[in-house]
Image (tube, rainbow, N blue to C red; front, side):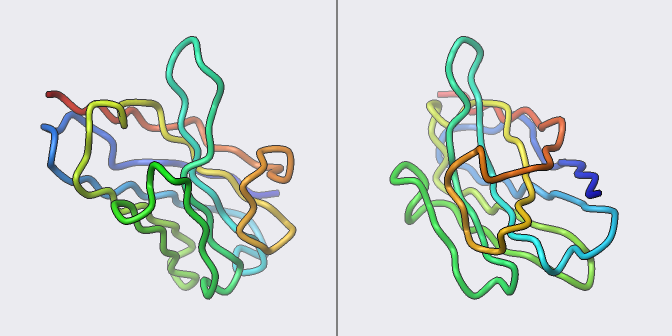
Length: 124
């Protein structure tokens, strides 16, 4: 079992930055890969970024490539999403998820644990 709690969301102007954190509790944190997904009301949840269990491999959605960076600190059992050059279209609830597969998965069906999410709002 893995419990996930996101934090770090908020209101920011376009061009600004935010760092989201995902604190995990439970066993075997270091064996899980993690992903960030986002959802806008009325739309499907979409993949943003993922990181492998060691942190050596990452994967990004095209919309996040070059602006967002995912990282992890296994000692702190925390996963981060650094978001720079934010745009109004980045506005969404951002969810952290854990996968037992170990690879940086982009498909939601490969994640077994989800956090409640943190709201990110980017004003123009």
